[in-house]
Length: 181
Image (tube, rainbow, N blue to C red; front, side, top):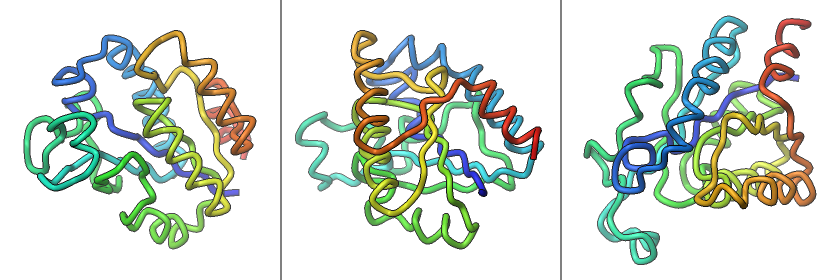
């Protein structure tokens, strides 16, 4: 079964910018470790990042953030994509909605998507729902994702597990899977 790592919204506005979140900053080393292992084992890494246009309906809820071609929409420097990585721009909570992500995953013959990034309760969960409905098995390493409010993290992980059959798997076990193949 082929995996792909999805890095969701690890962009300036969510980590150090408009929606600055210190917990999001704390997951960076775990995501770096996952990316390094993915590259070592030829697992595709796909960055799925907000890149909004002025008319996007989501802006009515959250205000302007991650506007296309701005600093806020850029991936944080600590997670700069490598030349072999893929980048998908998204304009909604879901990394699948009108982005070409599903087509890319199918071209790569991916069956399992490893969900990381922010925010667990919105963009990660919505991407998990779409992944499930598109036939992918999801894996979520808890060390690599953070919600808006720390106290909802376990609830969010349980929700993905119970409703989308996501496997909540420690980071080291994810990497171990690749090393035993």
